[in-house]
Length: 397
Ligand SMILES: *Cc1c(COP(=O)(O)O)cnc(C)c1O
Image 1 (cartoon, rainbow, N blue to C red):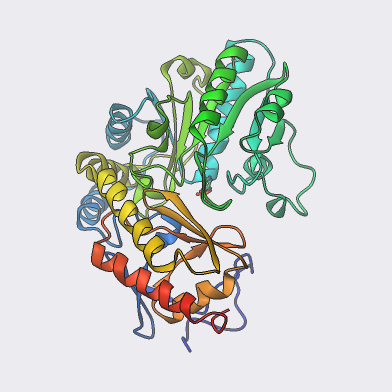
Image 2: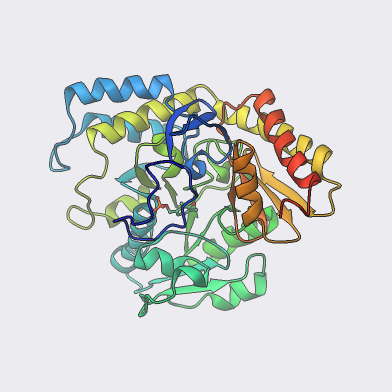
């Protein structure tokens, strides 16, 4: 057993950690402090989209470490301007606000939507409609936005101004819109909630309702963005342009950074002093963002994700599709869910023992999130492990 894993830890027990201490990573592979090697099909939950320790990002980071770490957003930060320019050139957005995490990016989105409705449209609207099974973060506002009760327990009172409706229920959505509604916010693949891609027809309906009622459309691309689904951003699959969208996870290739992006007409709603962050968009963070966007957008790595995702799902269908334990294999690009008839927690542990790291998405879904450069050979290895493990059921469960 690793010395890094001790009974009495001074850390808060907020995570039910697996008894593994990972100490080194390269590409699709990780090593623990006992020298065991793992094929990483979770990527720190969709973060290391370029694999571990990618050379181009490491070089950009090292160069910036030699030059300047932090100044303050009271000054111009050239890397921040350049990273924002790259993001806007490669998306439907015109403006960017950098944060340190996904939850903070969503907080910024919620604040911008409210402030636009209240200060610019001058209609006093504040409510945000979100969907059951969604996940939007752990701050008080974003856990309230999240459509899962488990993240809210013991944190009352929650902030006002959020309504939840069932995904794909047009009537419920229409009924939830009032003269207080400011925005509709959603993930286009419900990720933590079980890898559920949203139906294009439903998304079109949301867009129409937003236009009709003067609501802002906020897309949470924190997990789906940065090439993960086979496009740079998942909204591109739907032929839509959100008013606001948010990024984090893959945006920094493992360096903590988030961003809230929006259309030009929303810029004036965030005037000087209306929002801010000490660390948001530091020279280091935005050097990494710049290198990451250049690598993924410039190298069209989303096309690789689309191709590798098709291959992964086809292989899974072929090798485990007929297993009675498996009820569905779904996803978009390289976010893939294997839905099972029973809870999969023990299977995740069994996969670890066999050298494969995966993550759950809700109780019954195994979620696969390999990096965008994953090879067919690595996919074959992962599928072989999963298929062997499932073939030995019920012994594995
Ligand atoms: C991870 C995630 C968040 C929260 O991001 P943090 O960086 O953990 O705050 C929000 N929305 C979605 C869709 C996510 O996957």
